[in-house]
Length: 372
Ligand code: UD1
Image (cartoon, rainbow, N blue to C red; front, side):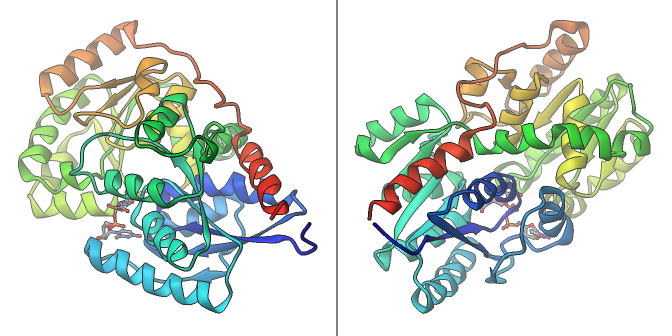
């Protein structure tokens, strides 16, 4: 039996990591056998892409910031690998815990496994089967080298078994992103004034998010989508918090003036967690290419149209409110009209998306690491 608590290096890097890590850190704070050390790779660094989330989520400041910033995949991944390796060599933890599927996830998992440090991957087993997505490569590789694979659905576990991953490594625990949503929804409703600021309190509106390079870096796709969006915004106002990558592309492709001129399109900068949750919770519908938002809308019971050819989160389609529509303008308009006519998809909350996933993760790790 260990006398000192096991040190767990908990890695965050990009926006969707923060809301997944917050409940894990909180659950670890109540576990005497575990001592979390929070590492930020600095993949996201703008105030509204990073620090605003630490504030909204009540997360402790990272003990280490690797300050890698933006860059092409190889450079960004390589810088994280090199800088994180140095931290691991100076002060090796007992385990490295990574979440999601961003470049920080695979880079830190790889640095750890090469130094024979165990890896836990939270949100394991998701597969889009589209290898052109950087995230799909990050997911497959991270799962392959992890020792603890925490899944959000039974289907994710099946994906891992089909790839030959041992049963003893797979733990179906539920969804940590939903832990945060459940904890903060009342506060978002109380504290965020975003709807009042936009003059949309009690009014119907849609929310749009776009950031995937497969979509926004392709001028044809982005132009086609803008051409759908403008008539759509005459049917229902569209609130659109713009990701920095997408803002650059909209400007580069000359699409910004038309969007700014459309009275129904409300362009905003990226929002913090509480504002964005309030926007989602009261929306009539959501259009997105994000992964996490497909899950959040399912839990909130808000119809979601996913602007991609496929999803790595089929449970949101099979059980939730998600419909994968791709980029076909007529299909999108048809689904929007049906939602506005009150025929939006309804669903149920998937198994174990109950706000207690982080507790289950910490219980598994406490047992395993205390027994070392
Ligand atoms: C990353 C993740 C993606 C996740 C998304 C959430 C990878 C491969 N992708 O994509 O899975 O869904 O985060 O946002 O890890 N930028 C800023 N400020 C920032 C961060 C980025 O201006 O704080 C701009 C830069 O121009 C940068 C671009 O956004 O080049 C892209 O950032 P990057 O971290 O490479 O990927 P994301 O598109 O944000």
